[in-house]
Length: 222
Ligand code: CA
Image 1 (cartoon, rainbow, N blue to C red):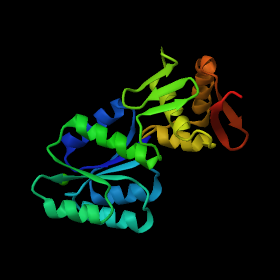
Image 2: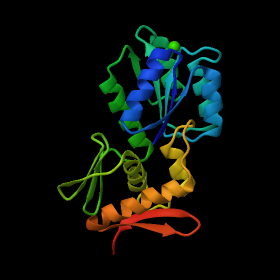
Image 3: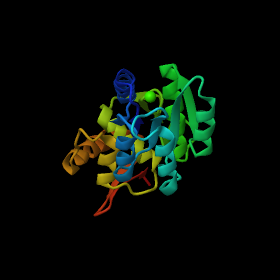
């Protein structure tokens, strides 16, 4: 899952980027409103974390422009504790949730998980498919009660396929959700992750089918 973090405070931006990466997200960051507006116009994200006090274009304006063409992207706004009016304006403009600074990192991560989940149409941190269970919050996968060892990338691919179970997910879409703009994952790498996942998922009676020319489909073995 891929996030855009728009925050001008470099210490906070770098710290949050690292924490969110460790939590398994691909993170792009923007240092001001112009960068954020630009990134939102050409990339697909699963969540926007938006500081309202941004230079060049403020966060409320970034949000207003976003909502004029995209109603669906979940948005978490960050505001100063005393900025009640901004918070209200942000929610009225279509933000989904807010946090006031300073905030607790664990709370930010929980809100991020909740918003990303909701954006994908699920309300639980636990994804299940046959005998396979993925705990989004704990970044753990189990077959029945047995933990399954997966690399971060394999887990990322599996999470996306499980969230979209029953739908075909394209290789490009997988690559886009898995990496920030300073990284690159080619179609060959995606094939390698899927190949490894297939082997590891055999005991779970879960199949990742290749739909020629379209992508992958995760489903229970019939
Ligand atoms: Ca700021």
